[in-house]
Each structure stands twice: as structure tokens, then as C-alpha cells.
Length: 593
Ligand code: SAH
Image (cartoon, rainbow, N blue to C red; front, top):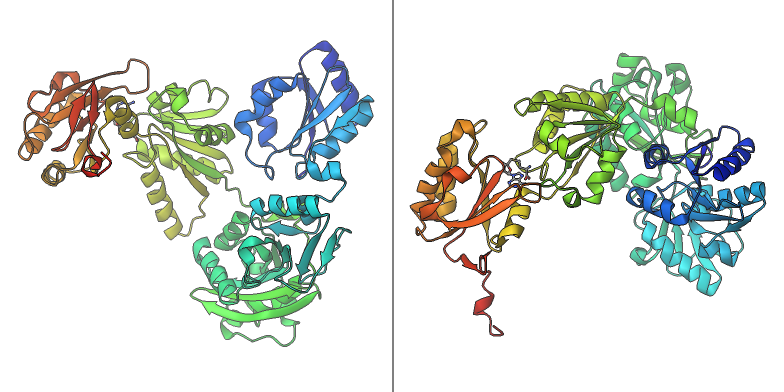
């Protein structure tokens, strides 16, 4: 990341601007600009290296919501206005901030301030070393454990199955039990694997042949199956190889893109020149090559290893695996771009009941990462200040299918897109629709973007919290909207839930077009519950204009209920105490009560 990214300098004062100019003059491709949180977000998401000439406090507060992990965060260096100190703040190793702080300090004649322990001790940083050796860390938490061992004892024992450069404090061992670090592509090495730092060399090539229109999921599952059968780690997969005619096969391209794997292609003549491979009549008929999976895997190794798993046929896919003796380099940027299809990421984000403090940091981050936001007007209004700079696609309530289609299209164009739902996106909202549409698309052989469902605080959480603790025991959530569900089904479920003594959460209780539903629902529930059963009614929970009150099944004031309201009907044990609704869990039967 560090090598391709640009250096961006942010300044606030004139003095800072002058210092920024000095730095930019020394850095080809860099840029100095006046500070704004907005610009920082953009450059952060681009993975650029960031230098701030201002107080550390401003920087910490600005980047706090953007921080993800030490692997993902970019380099952040803070410089005081006199250029006396260049503090490496985040992304010290992988992001390159320590190196950047040293260089900046040199340019402005100040001192670098570096606090990562391995740098201070003069010992090698395990994550940087692993990256330099083209090794993938399987579990980042174990890096810290190994790092502490290295700092305390001054050495680490390394077991490796590939050729590596080992810095002095790392000692080779042949004993997997004694090793602190295991460098292997096998998943069955070392009984105590769970305790060790496992680094995966990128040394496997999968030669793949497939029928046209095979889905990326089918290809992925075939590759996973073959690797698992052979006890090989998926993370060690470095390259995918195939015949040139399959170079733009959508499923194969999507699979490679999903895992950032380069796709190497060879002509039929090149493949036919590889000796000793199993010949396939089907392949010869379809594409004129004697075989695809085995010879393409062998060719991609460029003589540095052998075929270790002969061709396996699983459904529409053939897979062969070859292994290189030394880790293969990570793909170069140009190669990566050549295999990239323009598929972005689709977040389906729950924004919670309304107020900004009920939006989770994860949801906020997804929205901030997105260049386009798709949603229903009211929900978008609630997050207006976060999405001011984005492409906004807003449609009315009843056009959910159009909205989701539009979001999928934008993601296919390579954009990062958030589909916004109030509350939780998977509760009477958009997540299911997005997945159903994608499922149809993929069955039609279309590529699908990466999707993440980002949960939110649902109305039932927010409203229950306002009322007290009504959902302490089994509950059912039922929507009274019959726009997509036949009313008879709703009646059947209300009756069943009431009969089984569930606490009942009623979503969409009453709209202008459906004024009578809530009363009908009450009548059904009343068949199984006494008229005194407590009912909690919450309007606009955790958003402006909030209100709530308690009532009973026998006396619900229906006219107070609208589409911004959720109604919670207690079970036979639910009681009101001190303006709080409590459904007992059963603690009162315990001895300690
Ligand atoms: N996905 C949403 C639900 C969408 S259905 C969620 O998880 O909350 C819309 C219904 O949710 C509304 O008619 C209302 O019954 C309920 N609702 C949503 N937000 C609410 C809020 N802030 N206060 C009370 N009810 C709410």
C-alpha cells in the first residue's frame, strides 16, 4: 500500500502552509491542502499517507471514527508548526508512518517521534518482515504475542517450509512443536497450532478450467474443497491460471477479484507444449487445448515448483494445484488492475431509530466509505449531515425494488454504495430484498458485488428500552402491514403468538390507509389475554418528538398510534412498576431471590 500511495499534507495556519510547501517540494506526486475533516476522510479512504501540521488533538479527533486496524489504517504523521517533531501516530509499520515520520523530520530538520516497541528496541517488526517476505498473517492477534516474546527474549524460533530471508534474532527450527512461528501452506502442521503465529506463504497456484457461465460461488467452493481435501490453506493461494479464452469468464474474474488474486492466462499452444499432463477430450473440443487446469498451473510457476494436486473435477469446475518453492510476489498494481472487473462494495446499513448517537460506529464507517447512498427520504434526512458530499439516490417508500436495483447497478459500476434502512436492515427492511435480487442475478450468470449487512438498533430495541424491560422473555415481532403479506396470514400469526403467550411487538401498527388493523389485532390478542395486560406504546423512539405511554389491552387509545409508533403487548406475566414495563424472566423462583 505504502509504495503506491500519495503523500497528502494538511495545514491550518499560514505557517503550516509554508511548511507544507517545503515538504511537498521534496515529494513527487504529493499535495498540500487546507485542513477539513471532509478532505481527510476522502484521502484516508484512498489509502494515502497523511501528514498533519497542527495539534495532535485535532488529528486524533478527526481520524477516530475512521480507524479500523493496524493493517488497514494509512500512515498518519503529525508535525508541529515549527517542524520540531514529526510524530508517527497510526499505520506505523504496514502503513509506513514510521518511515514517513523519519523522512519528514529530515526534510524539515526536526526529530521523528516513534513509539512502536520493535522500532525502539531495534528488533525487527514481525508484520513488516512478513510483508516483505510475501507472507500473510493468519491471525493478527498472534503477531502481538510473538512480538512480545521477541521483545522479552530477544529471539524467535521459526519453522518454515519455504525459502525465506531471516533477520538475526529469528532462528530456524525443524521442530514444529518448538517453533514460535510456523511458515507453511499446510493446515495440519503442529499439534499446538492454535498457540503459534502462523504465516502463510503465497506459494500455491490454482489452475482452473470451467464451463461458461459458472458462478463465482461454484468456482470458489470447488477450489476450497480441493484445498481442504489436501490440507492446504486458502490464504496461500497466490495466483489463478487458466486458458486465454477463459480470461474474461465472469465467474472466474469475479472469484479472482474477490480474493485479490491475479488471473494469468496462457494460449492453447502454450498449454499444449507442457509435457506429462492428463489430456481432456472435453477441453480439446471446447477450446482446442489438450488440458487447462494442470498445464496452466505449471506454467504460472515459471519453473519454480511442481504440480502437487492433479486435476480434480467438481461440477462445472476443474482444479489443479501447483506449489512454488519460494513465496510468489504479491501481484503488481498493473497486473491487479488488468484482472479487475468494475465491481464495488454494497453495504446494507441499519441507521438505528433516528438520533445520531444510536448509529453504530460500524454503520457510520460504511456510510463514510460509500460514494453513493440509496434510501428512503425520511431515513436519509436523519443522517443528512453525514451524506452531504455523496451521490444520493432517494425514492419513495413503495419503490424498494427500484431502489435496491439502482444500488446494485452502482456497485457493479465499481462504486462503494450504502443502502440505508432505518432500525436494523434485516428487520422488515432492505437486506432480504438486496440478497434476493443478487441471488436471482447470480443464477442468471451475472457478477455480484461484495455485500456486507451492517446491523442497526431496531425499533424493538429502542422502544423496549424506553418502556423498561418488556422483552425479557420470548417475544414475537409482527408487522401489521398487509402490503406484502396477506391479512389472513397476519391474523393467523397474531393468534398463534397470543395463544403461546409471547410478548408481541407490533411494527407498522397503523397508517392512514389501514386505520382499523390495530384494533383487529387487539381483538385477536384479547382472545387469549386478559383486558388488564399491559401495553406499551412508543412513538419516534430515540428521535426528535419522542413520546411513550402505557395502557392495557382493554383500553388502547388507537388514535394515538401512527406509522412512527411501535406497540408492545405484554405476556400474561408482564407488569408495570414505577413507569416501567417488566416481563419477568423467572428469577423470582430462584433461591437467592
Ligand atoms: N427496519 C426497521 C423497521 C422498519 S418497519 C427497524 O428495524 O426498526 C417501520 C416500522 O418500524 C414503523 O412503522 C414503526 O412501527 C417501527 N419504527 C421504526 N422506527 C421507530 C422509532 N424510532 N420509534 C418507534 N417505532 C419505530
